[in-house]
Structures are given as C-alpha cells and as structure tokens.
Image 1 (tube, helix red, strand yellow):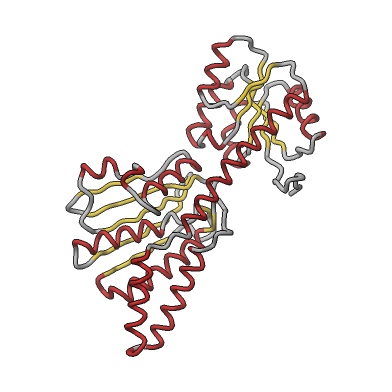
Image 2 (cartoon, rainbow, N blue to C red):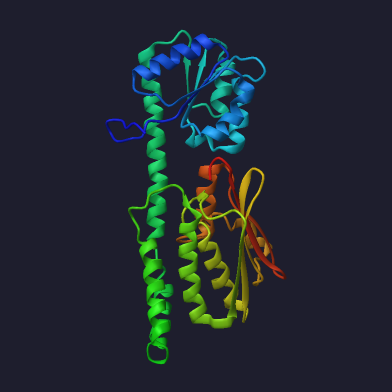
Length: 337
C-alpha cells in the first residue's frame, strides 16, 4: 500500500453521494492529492454492506439523498462502529442549520458546504486523518503498556513454583522456565502496538499462563477450551487471558477448586468469545460497578471493556451470581476480525 511522507498508510475513503458527478469531482480531487484508496457509493442503501466489507478510515457523506439521507446513514454506522474512531465529513448544499447541528450530534465530525473549495476539502480531510491517527496510536500505546504490566505476586509465585521443582523434577522446572519466558516476552513487547492481533497470539499467552498455573495449583484448576472459529481472526491483544486469570485468582480465594472454560465460536455476523467459571460469583452490588475504573487496577475488566467499546462500540457482557459463578462474553464483529 502506498505510503505518505510521514509513513502513514494512505487511508481508505468512502464517498457517499447520490450524484455521480459529485463523486467524480471528489474522486479527482482526492487522487490529485495522493488519496487513491476510494470507495464511491451512489445508493445510500448499500452503505452498510460496503462498510462492513471495506472498513473505511474516513467517510465523506452527502446529507440530502433519497432512500436514506445522511442522518439515517450516520445512525446505522453508529450502531456498529464507535464514531470517535470513524471520522465523518458531511458534504451538503443544505443551508438548514438544524440539519447540520443534528448531523454533528449524530456523530459527524465536520461538514463542508457545496460548492466547496478543493483545498478546503483536503485540509479538513487531513485534519481528521491526523486526529484519527493520534487516537489509534494512543489506544495502541496504552495496550502495549498494559501488556508490560506484570503483577509482582504472580512473578514471585511462579519463581517459587519453579524453584520447588528444581530438585524433584528438573525437566518440569525447565519447561516452566520456558513458559515463563514466553509469557514475559509477550507481556514486555512494547513494540507491539497493533490494535488487533491474531487470536493465535492470544492463545500462546493463555497456554503459557495455564501451564504455570497448573504446575502451581495442580488439579485445583480445571480448564476447558473449545474453538470453532479458528485461530487467525483478529481481536484486541490481552483481552482474553486476563479474564481467565481473574477467574482463577478470585475463584481460588474462596473455593478449593475452580473450573474455567473458554468458548470461541463463529456466529453469523461475529466471532463470539465466552469465559465462564464455577467460582464464588460476584455479589449484585459490586456487579453494578465492576466495569467502572475505580473498581479495577492494572489490567482489569474496565480496561478490556473500554478497549472493546472504542474499537467495536460494544464491550463486555457480564452475568454472575453467588451460586453459579460468572460468565463474561463479548463479540468481535465480522469485517473487523
């Protein structure tokens, strides 16, 4: 893919306008300025299908169109994509200020009036691209930082477990050192600032973590895993392993044994991921505030929920009671996997 001078990948720009001549004009302007990844759409009823397939980085959207107007399209987009990470510029000949204000309230980031100046259009596009890049980089940097957070008690307990095997089972100790090295290598990977990684990578972290936990707790932990979606779909890094870790840590505080399951399945429009345990559950009062930042520290449920909402518009779904354990579920929409 062609690169800009600042090494930023050229964004995918979707143009939605029922007038082919307007699309032709905008396309020529964009290509003259180096933007050649363009998806033109003249039928607004096709926007959602193309949106899911093409995943644009920015949308130029006409306000007044038949079938679905710009406001209708915005409403549909906001159902599946967090508007903060999808810049939208309304392009309109409508002088009605109420319509413009409504568009901004619905999630449009900017608007430009027809007939428009080419330089002004490019300037507005570039400003929003810079904003989107900054937001994406901030989220990626936050994720990389979180990956480098190792809880001291986990590290100390793991080293003690390895030490206990050094004399009685040196081969087991050696294998655990390899698992710990793998876990630390992935957790300390500051260079990894991808917003999404293959599920296979998350499973490597889970596998290393579970080998360590089973060595420490033995048959006090039971772990079941099922996957019908494969390992190559994308998801935010470090969003499954912490759920499993939380289930084990909190479960063994009150129960002698804990069973945890991870189920990954392919649905019609998404990949569904569920972590379930038979631990002590969460009392209703705490459950209401568990996704608030004040309730969590480090790599907690709040952080995972926040990242999922920023990327996909929907976070964690938590069901729990004090008699049957906890179930945490989230989905990765297809087209974003």
